[in-house]
Length: 145
View 1 (cartoon, rainbow, N blue to C red):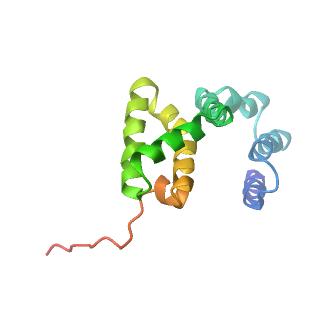
View 2 (view 1 turned 120 degrees about the vertical axis):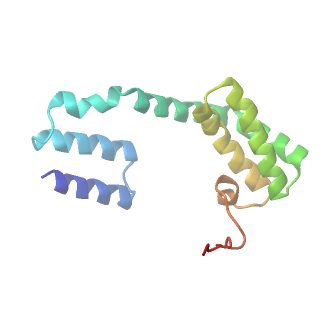
């Protein structure tokens, strides 16, 4: 029965028509009603410190976005670093280093994710090129004998 619930959950996640939170709660409820989990086990994940921490990171990130801090920081970074990808990456990394000195690295990542997207859009770059390491040519592989 648990494999059926798992398959249905994966299908709902892939379908992407329902919010992720609703699918997660529905999965926990389905596992409870099928008898796979008891009540305390089904609800224990909601009180887990990691879940609460990740939820607060989303709240911080959205708060920075709603207050305009991300747009302001993106504008300042673009003005000072220009629009070259390499200079922008160095500026974002320097800002992340400074921010990580005052808050947790996860909090800095949550705060700088929307800033990086704004910076990429202002510089007419793809945000994915700023968020992940990308090489324009494949790395050379050396074989040892």
